[in-house]
Image (tube, one colour):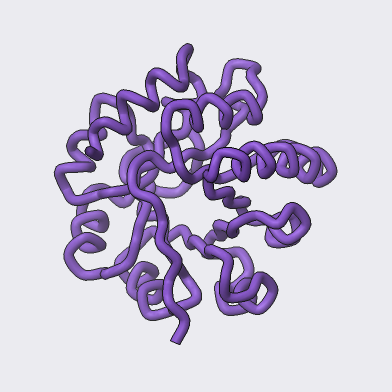
Length: 209
């Protein structure tokens, strides 16, 4: 049976150039890495495929030089092209089993989940290395209905599977999420929109030590 790949604990970085005040995804990732982030997901919803490939290649090299895991959102083809460490997919994307056939056993597959049923299904599927749990709170980066803290608590209690808490998490409520047992947390707009990303991330990372 395939063994799941370990996912770094702490802040899970995701790009979001529509929230970064005009700064590039590359710049934001460089700052995230300077702040101590060990895993970055490349997400670019408004760019053309060619733009995504070019940018993903540049960020992939940056991550490789700094021993940071590089994950591509949705686009399995781009993940393959740039030799990413893995891919993160949603409930309406390609099935994890099909993604695994394309990527092979040594790549990471993350899956967004929004309910106990989806979480249980992912837990039983050994092709999924970790899940996204959320959105916990209302968020401007997704139009999915918030799941609240109940699903987070269920995941901690019932699923022996690495997960990333995501959705509407800010500096003012991250302590609540950590107190519920989350060991990997994502803040998108709060990080990429910060005036000093590396300093902000450094302070957040201290909460996990």
